[in-house]
Length: 179
Image (tube, rainbow, N blue to C red; front, side, top):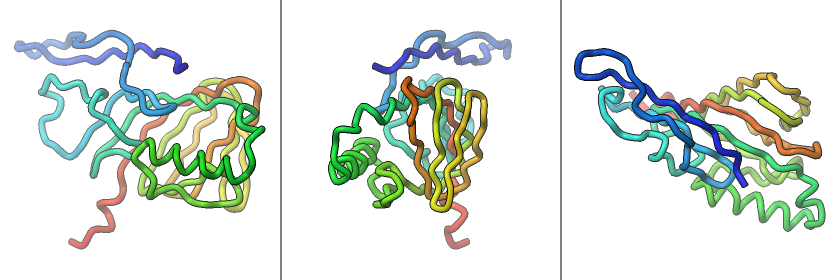
């Protein structure tokens, strides 16, 4: 079960004074992700009263947009009884469930390897996580930060407790579009 996270969203009132618009648990979840906020390239988005956290439906941010999320990774020991083929099939399905099947990479390194057109800012809050890359692995401890720049990677929780992470994803795909 995903741990609830309190989300406080501010706004300006009709007189331009700041106030709290929403204060409560974030309720939009996608597999292990709790969606907190998203942006796109729409102008004036801070003036609308739309819960942008509820609008997120997929792993990747909108075109020219951002995603702010909280996510939890259970220990890999929970799927240790599965064969390699079963773990790989589960990884493929997991990305499909997050509407991101196209970024899943079938790799012998880890069943959740993926590569997206994003720059991601990730902070490990608790637990232990290993960043799996094509050529090396990096063990993280709480409050370590990763700037993931469109590389093939996976997150492996080889510990005994759930790992809790925060992430901001920034879409970079538009930079390759013809001018």
